[in-house]
Image (cartoon, rainbow, N blue to C red):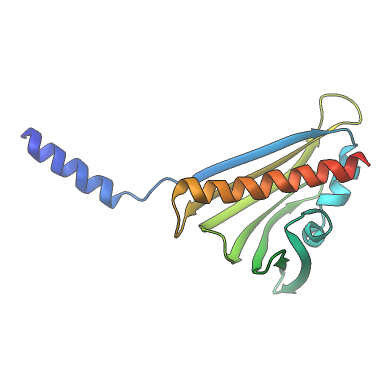
Length: 160
């Protein structure tokens, strides 16, 4: 096999192979008991009470699937469905069904874990997605911004 054939084959393989999904994780320690943090985060539509980008959250349920419709500050709507929930582990997963974000195949999980010290908790928010209509950098920047602003708002509310 010639070098040229190998390069052509490698190029065709690269075109045929889908891009790897982008993984994002943000976390923060907070001086509040896990039960208190979960009481704020755990309700699927509770995000409307703590995330600065969400003006209103409307919850609906059909065939056992919970869906939240988020009215965003500055306009726009984001529709997400809950994909998993474990109250004993203080976590839930969700996916975006429709919205203006530059992502596709978005799946996320938010969780509360025991902190290193008594009375402390760790908030962990993870996501996996593909860029859509934007560069990977811009898509990642959008999701990181959502996670960081949400976690900062949570920490501020819990510290009051």
